[in-house]
Image (cartoon, rainbow, N blue to C red):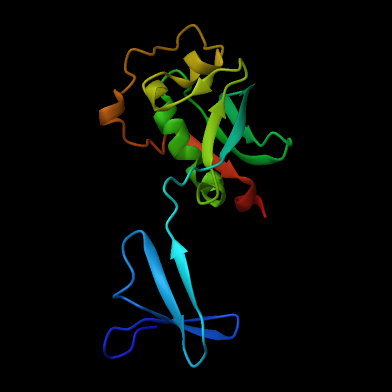
Length: 169
């Protein structure tokens, strides 16, 4: 907490630490113990690297579309989304549908998506359709000519429905 003079005091494990602004910089914070001897210096990590969490994707055809399921390497299901028009839904839109179920993992790791064929999916795949990526069987009358370009792709709730394990509980 900051006092009226702008000095910051931090309580850690019963010790009150005061930030010494004169000795601190953008790369380090120098803390002095309040009412005791000693101090601490905290250094900023030069390069913080996120641990990658591999998300294995599977697709399963259903009566009116395709269900994409996200699993950790352990096999634990993270989320599942139903896409009723895989030939008109691109990878960006599919990821947007999965966002709610993936949200708890986003602050812990960098997510790496892997298709059933072992292909790593990135933002470079955003314009590809779900049918193309997951080799979904499309009805003969399915027309993919009106796939919306990525830059203009709004999330079409009437074309897609999502469920997550969190919503089922």
